[in-house]
Length: 278
Ligand code: NAP
Image (cartoon, rainbow, N blue to C red):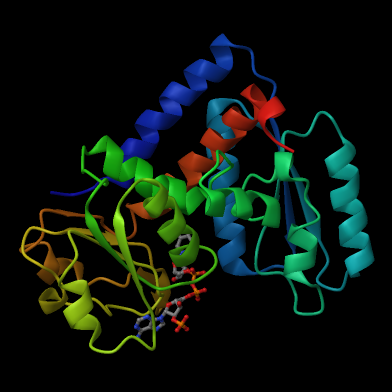
């Protein structure tokens, strides 16, 4: 069965739009893009489209590739202080002469839509309520919507990146899954992935996960995004694996749309529960 992230996203956005209208929530998202990375431009367009749909105002700052770190930090400081701004996204990657870690951590935790500031990640580590990174939240939401049990499940995550694999492992532990994290130094990856009730791959290596890596009846979630000849390719060999697993995400159309939906979800939570943050 397909874990249809696109369909779920559309349904969630309709509910979110209703809630924003009904409660007259005035939400504004500030998005900062430095330079003209083509993939970033697509990601921002998708975020903007979803915001427009639900009635969230977007303020976009497209900055020259050559800006100084001081300039970027001052802009973030100004947005931090602007009470009309609910959340801030600093789209990655940013040019190499700018320190992404330093700049993204200058966003105050209460406006950190992506959930990547040290304070918010530390709360995740402690198992406290926090703003969850959107891809992590989207994967969990998708599993929950399809009634896939997480508690007690053997979850194998392939990839320990800071954006997906690592925070996802913490979030799933907090949900009482038994979590194994594998990576490029893992020996006999296939022996590890075959133990999974839920197998989640987040590496960006095209078709790393093949049919024999998957236990019969497992749930397979493909997070990876690579481009071959301009076409999006996931980590998972979808065509061959769909015959052995119980559930599988298409890619595109699985985790990506859920990530976008969770940006809106985070913004609503931040607007409604501001006193819980920062
Ligand atoms: P990352 O920081 O680049 O990490 C990649 C991970 O993959 C690393 O931990 C690396 O291991 C592991 N890896 C590489 N080759 C491997 C192999 N042969 N076997 C096992 N593990 C291997 O990645 P990220 O930023 O977390 O993102 C992961 C992927 O998700 C990327 O493709 C990204 O584009 C995609 N993504 C998708 C969405 C979405 O909404 N769909 C959102 C965010 C990211 P080492 O640590 O040992 O190097």
